[in-house]
Image (cartoon, rainbow, N blue to C red; front, side, top):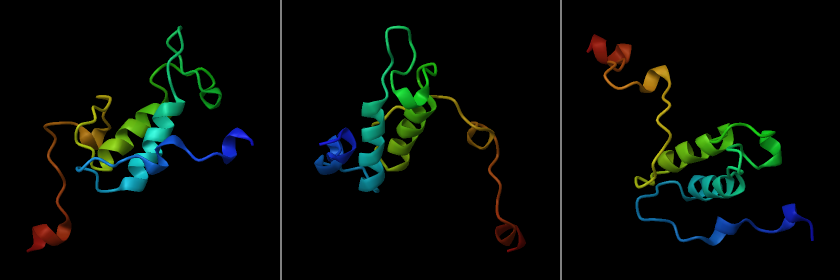
Length: 98
């Protein structure tokens, strides 16, 4: 049976209590399991073409774990402009008009 036809490891994993999106959580764990650093500090997954660790897929998978509600997961501290601490959040115009 080809590797792609077998079920992923985490399809039946017990979901932690803090998770609000079990499907996203399980998929993120599968991606994390597939992307590991090699001895040279690059991702060993062939799809990543030896990107520096952590690769884009691994960073996004860790972010997905957080979005799924797993509050115990530590995520890479690279933030986008919208996520920078100390920046004021924009309010919707409907809130300002009220």
